[in-house]
Image (cartoon, rainbow, N blue to C red; front, side, top):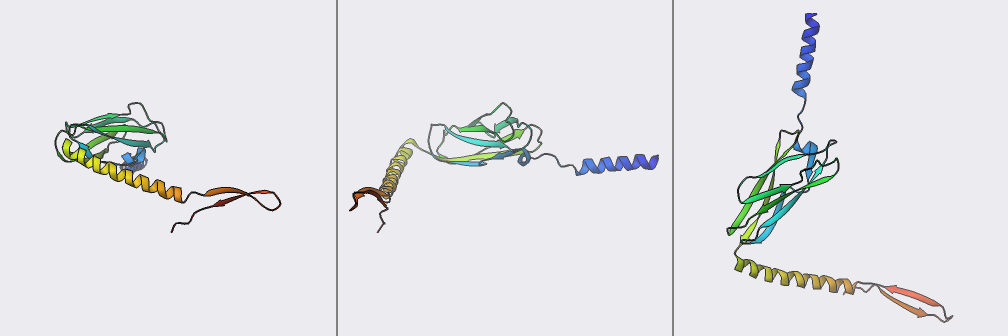
Length: 179
């Protein structure tokens, strides 16, 4: 009887000691764990939205999504996220001071001991520098868009209809060749 009791105890301890606790990767997958906001205008809060997918079989609950400083606030999906579905975590940085920033949020999922860290980063520019950068950037974006539109127009198939000698109509489609 002692041998049986000892064997059962040993088996139970071995099973418990080798059981792996759930990790954040077992239940959730982020589209991106870092979002770069780029240039941000001073005094204008900037928000990044993290998308989290439930990769587990059970509903996923975000218990907490806490910023690590007072300059960032968070908002997240409160209701359970069904298996295969997505939820969001919004991180808003107040952009009060001119500088580069890396801000972190710690995320805790129900039933998981591991804490996951997600990050937003960017550069806060003074209003004057931001407006100058935006003007230059918008002009460049417009020029790029115009060039792409012109190229698309140049490679657009040309359709024409002609009648042959037997008075039958034929449609000819030709694609211009770039030189």
